[in-house]
Image (cartoon, rainbow, N blue to C red; front, side):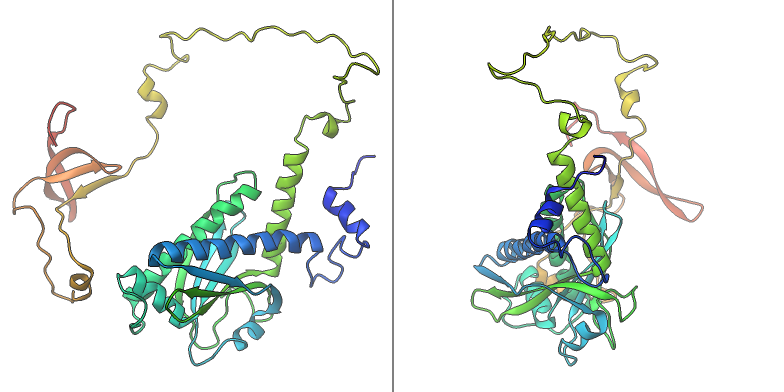
Length: 351
């Protein structure tokens, strides 16, 4: 046989055979639903752990199943007078599958207030500052969920990319780049922070994106259970390690031979640094620093002056990947700022 049935397909046949495929293109197979339920659990767990960490309080997250409905019906199912906060991203590292996290407006403001040092009780009015804080909180949830999902994908690296967030306006859509009749896979959950009112969150994927995610998880599972080159995948007979049965051919076992470690490098490499010379690093010039309380930051307006810890004319710090390596003076080169290095920080020099 060239085409062997997978364990999921065998399970579908044993359960009646009705879930071997998506006949009308509108539903998920039982195998897909099982995998996507795992994904929904990961998002619920990340919401609980991140909100609990930020608030320092007990948090309960109650998953409320999953549903499939089109974008327009989904929008109409939510209160029109208080549009939700919409966080959109893509699965970087997995075909850029689009993802949307929606959170009730009072929930977004609760999360933002907690992140800004409040208790989540006296909610502020929506503003760019607070909505950016809510976006950062949801970014942490998505990053945590992606880390868990990567475990189902044989540790494939997943990162949230193309992040956009805003309050829904007018006839908003969960997936703004798709049509109102696009079908969504939606996983709602209720989030309850100790001492505060509960709010709802929704994890939404297009139905096509949900299928692709489930397919990727299945392929990773199949590859993990039947790795390339194993006897099962190549049709080779299994070796007999027992005392009875057919005798196996003698096996040649000998110590592995390695090249001795010495001073000689790879051919053509003039020094070890050449091997990493092309790796990009981030160079930052720091004019100065200061510390402010959250209330002082909120009081900033156009024209406010922030005093730094350096005197005018003092050298600025030059950092590579956050490490101080030099100091210099600010210059202007063809209307662009630059820095002339005046001092290299050596290993023996104090910083």
